[in-house]
Image (cartoon, rainbow, N blue to C red; front, side, top):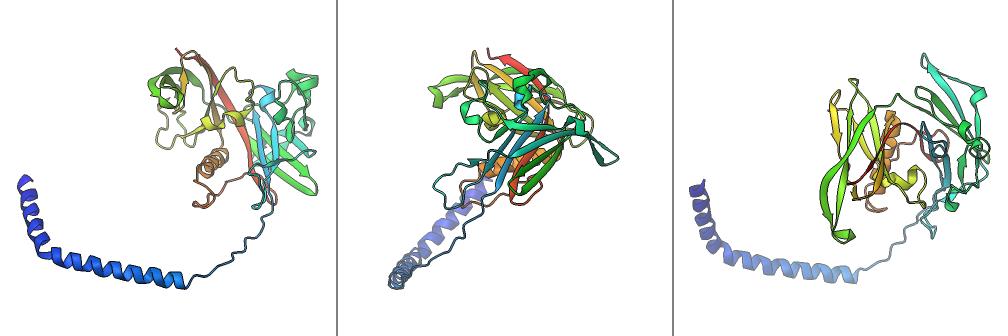
Length: 326
């Protein structure tokens, strides 16, 4: 191999001397052509007016039903801004009619229990942050009878119905039997330059994947003690994804990238979800990280039915563990 490289170098050296003059002439000729092109473009400058039609703002639905604490079961309604709006924030949608009904799927047919139907409303209670009280709908029993407030059950399906103005929307999600999170451990220390070279640790999840295909999970982690954060949206940047396409039936040791400081109390949530929920949040992350409005467009795989609407009704079957980072 060394001889081949040496011979190749000698050949290149000889050819370089032979064609050096020709290369120089071609570079000068190319430069002249480029100059003429620039002069021609400058003399033919023209303004183009591109008409961009104002888009119709869409309803955005972010809804959750879980087996977790009842104040983590809620529906967020907002309106996307127009393309020409001076704000990139969505506008909350108050005063909508929002219902969730429990049922089950029998022989591929949903049967809904009308007696379980709950009307969700906007609430003004202390444990919900002020910026989370407009356009966010909870079971009002959180105030009157918290122990009886809406909470999902494994194996049950749930129907979301929304009426806003003359428009009606719906979605169905199911709480699967959860995959059990056996334990979480801390390790893999690294130096974080962005936090003053502090040492951070990653959390590893340990669990056995069932010996059935098409299990899908979302993994969340939250840091205790931050009263300004609330709900699943406050920790969405910790969300990562998992499928058992290549790990079916194996024991899994999964380490998400987020790091924590020594002394932090971290709660990890592993959510077993249906494929449509997994696909939506995966497309959401792709859209969020898509490098701006002129990048390749990403389609959100919404499971909300209705006109001019996007979003997801997410059934999260949760297994949780809490660890203090040492």
